[in-house]
Length: 284
Image 1: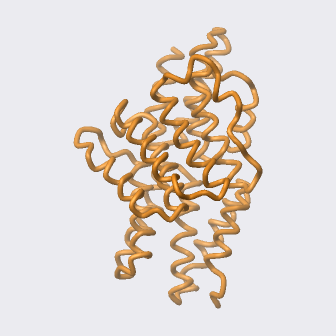
Image 2: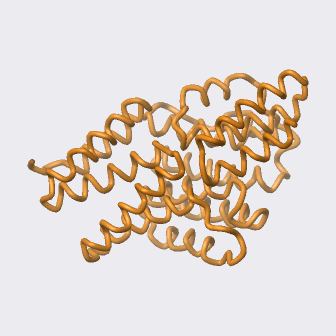
């Protein structure tokens, strides 16, 4: 039963993270009753992954401190931990546990570690190799599962890192990884992040306002369908800031208020600071 619940958790994380979290919590309960540490670890890392877009950040961090993840699963949990801490503007550095014996040759672990390395480079203020590590990690993971399984969440993470590093060529490469997959379904979570990134690129390229707005509103709609208040807030902040900067402040107010409320609940102080910076000099 725990195996079925764990696999369902992973599947639902692609399309509905609220359902994924429910299944993940049930899987943990079963694993603890059975005393099966291996499957409990697998269930737990899938739960932690789903908790990131669902916004259960404090619980995810608490689980990361519970010492229940095996070396093969730890890197994915560590990627969640560093993502949360960076969003909160808190000190972070890769955990020494990443070097645990038995995990270094696992391809999925290697992929996650490359994305962690991209985080670490940004944390240190070095943007030169962020895209290289993020793209390499995503290509490696794509080789394992196409755009299914944890690819949705890893792609979201990688695109945000590369966008923050201002590496447009790297972002195009990440889109290319998705476009080469003609077999896997397009997941809801992947669609939400694709629409968000297209909207941000359209703003940067000075595209027609209707194009920008269509992408960002689609991103909000898909984020809601994904049951991801975290992604929805990011998209609300993007659209709200753009509307405010283009003289449509009245339309921006509700979006910005909602984004800030979610950021406050998450403790995402760094995201709030970025939103404030995007609105600097904008008059009501």
